[in-house]
Amino acid sequence: MLIAVMMSIFLVSLVFTVDVAYMQLVRTELRVAADASAKAGMEALTRTESTSAGIAAAKALVQRNNVAGQQIQISDNDIQFGRTEVNSDGSWAFLPNEQPYSAIQVTVGMTDDSPNSTVPLFFGRILGQSNFTPQHTAVAANLVQEIILCLDRSHSMCFDESGYSWSYPSGTPDYPSGYITPPNPVGSRWAALDGAIQRFVSTVGLLQIQPDVGVVTWGSDIVLSSYWYPYSGHYTPATIVDVPLGQNLGSINAAIADKYNDIMMGGTNMSAGIDKAVELLTDPSTNSLAQKTIILMSDGQWNTGRDPIEAAQDAADANITIHTISFLAAADQYTMEQVASITGGRSYVAPDSETLEDVFEELAKMLPVVLID
Image (cartoon, rainbow, N blue to C red; front, side, top):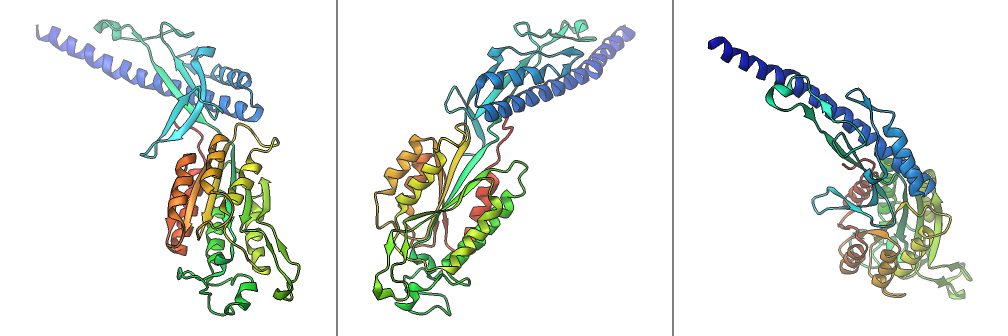
């Protein structure tokens, strides 16, 4: 009797020692196959903008994997396209069938209703379980990012960080001479932004997949009369495309630094900046399946042009996300929060230059999303 009991214990131990370890190995192999298939499908979808190409790539890649000794296959029904969004806790959720497609979900199973056979166990049949039916679902998000840095260059960016209007950094002439003086490279709000953009560029530069980036600066239309000698006839448009959208990360720092060589005047036409950024991101030459993002930074309150909330709604209609950064306490935080909320973005408040740099670094780290589940 004792031997019979011990044999039962031995058989149970054998099941756990061999079959459970084998089941874990099969799960790992299945996960690798599903993950690789989802990534391949997403890469093909992004490159070709064709769901048929995405399906073909996902099916071809998964067949190159063996799980439990058999070649794996998936059907068209095992592949779903959709979008992703960020949950309140920072995790990502897959939204099936939501367009424009920016994610793919692949389910690989070894079940009775899948193209693959179930997995026979070695000793499980002793306990009444002869087969194992694992399944794994992988979600890969878009590899392509298109980003516009939409930056305030109204005259207040020449002020210092005290938060007071017409308070310039040391060495800058007082008004009215200070009004026609380029931003001070030390102590001005533009200098603080310069440092933050350098942090952003260096962080994005470490990413394995480089996004398309462009820079739009905005203020208001300015034409100087003869009163502002020697700048008579000097014209500054409300928006300037300082860096076109593309693989131009290396040009951004120089474009920001170039603003130290010219006067910076005008009011705060925030909607003009948003509209120009939307125009660039919706140009027919861009990738329609790219995740399109605007990073909007301002140190003040809009005082010319249409309501930025209307411009934000246009961006939302074009599936463009706007993250907003309110620099210093005088910034219009309410409007910036509304702009971000309407487009599904995040709103940040940077009370000083150090926080401004931290915010731009955080945004740079948020950008890459490849395998989310």
